[in-house]
Amino acid sequence: MKAKKNVIIIGAAGRDFHNFNTYYRNNEEYNVVAFTAAQIPDIDGRKYPKELAGELYPEGIPIFKEEELETLIKKYDVDECVFAYSDVHYTKVMQIGARVNSAGANFKLLGLKDTQLKSSKPVISVCATRTGTGKSQTSRKVVETLLNEGLNVVVIRHPMPYGDLVAQRVQRFGTIEDLKKHNCTIEEMEEYEPHVERGNIIYAGVDYEAILNEAENDPDGCDVILWDGGNNDFSFYETDLAITVLDPHRAGHELEYYPGEVSLRTADVSIINKIDSAKKENIETVEENIKAVAPNSTIIKAESEVTIDNPELVKDKRVLIVEDGPTLTHGEMKIGAGTVAAERLGVKEIIDPKPYAVGSLIDTFKQYPHLDHVLPAMGYGEEQLKDLEATINQSDADVVIIGTPIDLNRVINIEKPSARVFYNLNEVTTPNLNSILSEFISEKGLK
Image (cartoon, rainbow, N blue to C red; front, side, top):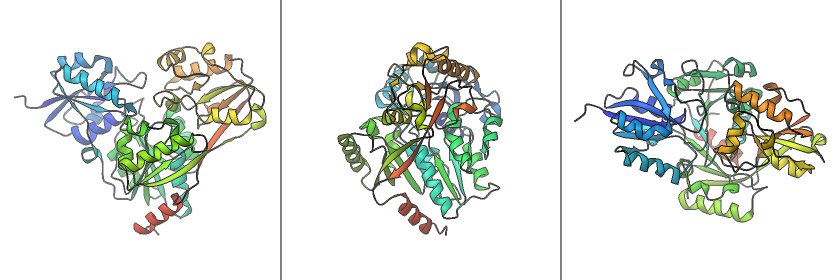
């Protein structure tokens, strides 16, 4: 018998690191020999650093491509492989499980008990059943409601650490300048910028126990922690009020993607978003599925209100639409808020960006063939930002519609006229978030 079980954690620079930190880092029964990486470019070929890996891993832990999984299982005599990334179809999850089993190892998923941390503050989580359902606008609505009650809210965001992991162990964002200070990618800015623009404090990084401690003791005060989820993952923290957002444009996906169904089954509140642009039968399907697997969850129906800052620029024009990257890529959406705005405003034509794509964006369109007449705001590194800028500027569009939540003109030089799209949650049924949060505040003795 081996003294320790050899483990590979299959991930994408997020949940995988958290599972390691909470369950494996100081666990003498296991030896984590490697991470594998997927979904995000340029995260393989590195190490989970010794400074974060702890005393049991003085050399750190190597990160390999997921394609090498079977070879790694044999090379390191692996006993268990732990699947630890999000927004993945069940078929894909079990295909990976079959690869692991056929190579001789056990296939494992860690749940809430072994991965959730306990906060000394009340915790509200906003999660989702797919990427791009409207978590961010829901989180903003929750924060604004609590702030209006005089409470100090600290937001903690699901991890997106693609750079220097040691430097990113704990990150605090209070100003726009902090985004540059921490060398944020476009994906990170899409999540952090809307909060800091409103004066909210938001934390993120790699070590979520250390992050929680910093957030609870934030110098600006902390009455409530808001967990702002990523993809369709479940919360890293034990939650006092769990809110899950669902998308009727992808009806049925709430029961088909991991770990989105976990987020649904643990939801105290289920928000069916985008009912203003979804088909009635799809809304009904989502509602039926909620009642089937989360019968005690309160259902709210909401519109995703789309506005644009310069509508006169786009009417009767040929437009290039830049949408939120993850929503289009591993979220598998064909459109985003920019497309909705364009169609409602009566543009002359939505041009196809593929003929103008350069560098890494050519590969992106090959990897995600469902993308048509939309340009994902890819920007995981300096080279991708340059490719995005070049693709936009050499297109023959009259106007660029920016459907991503950040001020894209701040990070790249767009030479064409542009209009920004904004979207907010508008609940159309009762009870709504105001009444639910009011009850939460009373129950927790926060006012």
